Length: 108
Image (tube, rainbow, N blue to C red; front, top):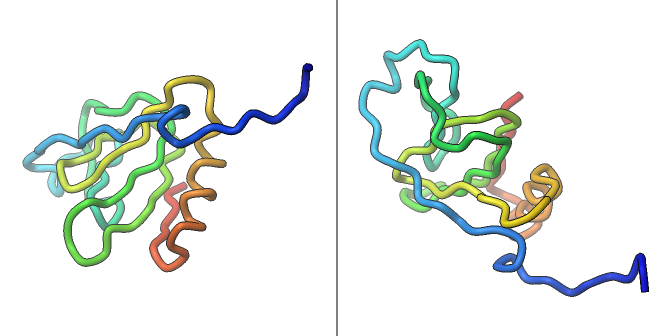
């Protein structure tokens, strides 16, 4: 029946992808925001993730949840959300915040 709710897991909706190592992001003046475990840390000329995404820290003391409304580069201290199908990334960000309300930031 149309309009029925389906029960899904995060694994049905998206994968968590590893960021990549990157040097010089603090001095770079590229147009794409660079994210690490604790949020925005610099700029780069090319995005690693080519869409809005949720960044989840995986190393260090803070390990926050961050939202990027635009393509960005994620370094190897964090993961980024890669949807498997059409997912409202902003909804995913807010939903993940309910898992740990003390770790959040948003970049406009």
